[in-house]
Length: 154
Image (cartoon, rainbow, N blue to C red; front, side, top):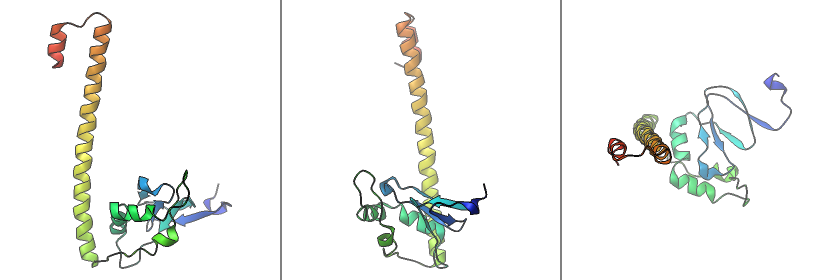
């Protein structure tokens, strides 16, 4: 299928856009695509101007304050959708491009740190779940002894 032959309502986007999911915006569905494509009308492509860094706009868009503001534009209870016409009129504080880059760098570092901590915690949780399952298996097979519990650190 040639993507140019798509007949449904779609938005075209490329590597310069930021994509934002307008359905249930509180989920912060935003992505910086590294390819060209088409997306449904549930995804809104934003094209930053020459005074706006794409990643600066990304971080602004997923910030608590802006997400709360976006949520206030929503219509629909079961399937809340952001009113992107209103969102496009939100004021955006635009420092110089170099300051935007500095801010993005700080946010990237913070994001990397949080991701590293999250990965470490998930690994520990998986280990604890494995330990629990091992103890349960031994308990119900009659192999649970004080030495097994000591070895498990219980």
